[in-house]
Length: 473
Image (tube, rainbow, N blue to C red; front, side, top):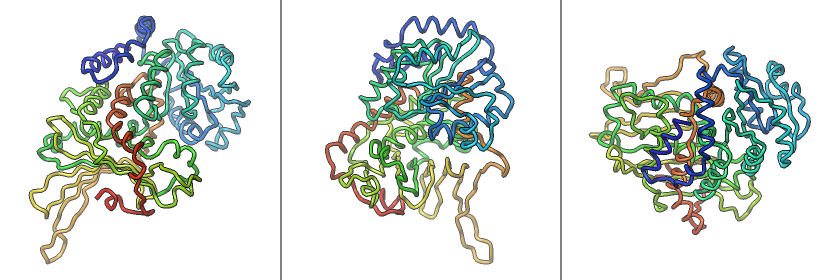
């Protein structure tokens, strides 16, 4: 809580975020939390940990959480970790593990708990079932539809499942606009201190995303040129070849801007822009990201593009749909380091390729030079630099080659959800989004959301399989 309180005071002094977030945290929670932390000086990763997963049979749990748990437990470093799967019906653990993992290795660690998440009394039963000891911590992971989150949080708090040893893990979206994000954050703050809340943006936990910080701060070659004098523009893109598949209901309520741009891409932009001090400490990462976002100016709707691929409305079953499947916005920063450098965020479906990248374009002295550095986030992870070299042969011709860093073959990178779970267990919050970051990201994009809401004609159609640059120019 001490770290969270320090960050809150810094943000409040800058006048960028509503102070009611700080006031809503109960002072008594702070006192009790400090007492808990002081009384448990050993490494929290070695504490007995009970992970309670709401939505244990859902898509996220079966595709991501259970495989991640199987992997981190296989390391032998989490012998004190047990799992409680919450579901509406009686849980067949062996059947669940067979279908999701093809093995039953987690069976000895798992128990099931059936409950009605809309029944307050069932949360009291859950509390008794958990039997939290003084030397234990509980992680409550809400892998549930967004509409269910506020009610579950309220019932958990009313049942007393918000003691200092409890950590609450929340999946995005964190609201659908600035007002709803304020409401959600204030609502959760009634029951949990900010230090107990872990807002998951799994892009932050990706290995290559963390490497942006290492690459920038650890290599003098790029540290010296990471500024407006040397860099012409920055693009952060997340492109998909597929359409909405079977997610029509979700996508109709969300759209490209809310689904990817507001969260994932804004966080990647913050990592790219933020200052990396000489005495950099990973524990300061969230504060550094926030300061970078605070310097980004509010988006200009005239510099935003909103598109929908041909045939989307039929796929969604809504002939008059105004939901965008493509969103792009050009931003600017007031930071002396970045002032005047276009910062372009773009995401879309049914494009010509699948890739998530941060593309940095250096200033050319003449057109015959290469100038692009790429951080590849997914599906391939690495760093790539375009270089002109002499083409082999008797003729003195140049050709573009790519100098690339990739992890050696056979190296298994941790999945993002493995990192999320390990860091939450060990009380490492630097790869989780703070309430202030969430609000600032929504604040930046609010003018675009408002403009799009008032002007349906801003939605432009595009052909499936189109190249990004044919849309953004």
